[in-house]
Image 1: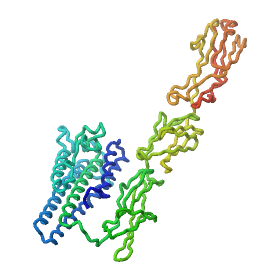
Image 2 (image 1 turned 120 degrees about the vertical axis):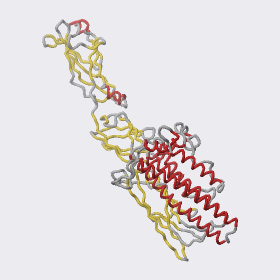
Image 3 (image 1 turned 45 degrees about the vertical axis):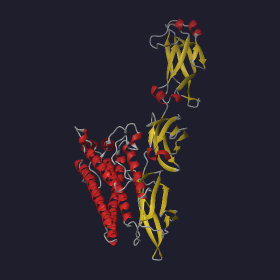
Image 4 (image 1 turned 90 degrees about the vertical axis):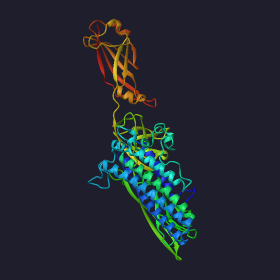
Length: 532
């Protein structure tokens, strides 16, 4: 019955509201639009059931008043309950009218698939209808705000726990007020600005649910006045209610398995997939980690769980079976890196793999074929060191496989070798004065794109090279060096105009991310430098 303790349905709707608020803050794509539609359909289904339940409460009050002899005070209770039902019905019909207007003016249903909307996004059209075009305050959302808040004032006299207002601006909303980008918006902008059609419908379904929830509380309080809250069980129905039928792999699926009618004399026994459940307050708590491997083209996998409830009815054990379907949505991996199209061979390629759908429960681990992986210090960071031409990176979270990503592997680009004479680039065409051919440095310059992507892998050094002083195609002198810089003063002392210096690179090393030298495969490069 009514009171400070929330019912399972109220808790579920509260969770749906948080999910709806979070989804509104995300960038809209087809997967999120689908989840908005799932959320809207779930809320609408609950709302339809609540309308029936509230109508039944009104019938119960009517019956109780008649049984009590239609006394004046009891008759007033019935009259109040009827007024509550009428005002609520008017409010619900108004909200559903807004839903129909939004659907009709954005193209209606999809002709090929009536279960889908023709234009599930339609953000601009939603904004024009709900917020207004030329005059911002002319939209339907401002009228909706007034009606919701008037309804709250009406219902407060029957339910002291009723809030003063049901339609809040951003600064008053407990969720939006903590977000600096949302707190300055009014009710219309907060709920319908930059909002796709399916999200706007979900918002309206949530507001309708609030109306029905507060009506239910008010009717229950009125029922208590005539003793209509007491009931005798004559029918039992097995029910299951999940927080969401669509969950991301790696997150927890939560649902309540319960008897629709209950009594202190009923001690149900419950099981889930053959295992006994602990029953608390007449409810068996179901919780498990969702997983799947057979995703369809849209990244969804349909699953089912089975529960059983056994109670004594007329002195005999009666078992009710519940089978509940749910959808496991494949989490979308986001690969953040300067170069995600291809990795560099035997280099430390740093990646950041995030799965936003998992939120705080995301606890990644990595493995790979064709590469070594090193987990980073921060969540989602991984270093991939390819050992073959293709790498398949596998991602798991909490022991559950999330997905994989395949990368092509490109070879490390060879550095450019630049010959410097006395600190200046050697002029290979015009030549260098023979008398000034003294200090020579071979500088290994990394490819600029490679250096920007992996600076810790782009450190080169010429470690061995030879120089020959050549006259009339015959060597006059030669020397071999084990570093990038050499003093060739002896060449300058012997050189004559018309001679040439032939330089041959023998070995170039690259320092990798660990500071270890590896072969840069740049040997065999050579130049002839004319002497003037």
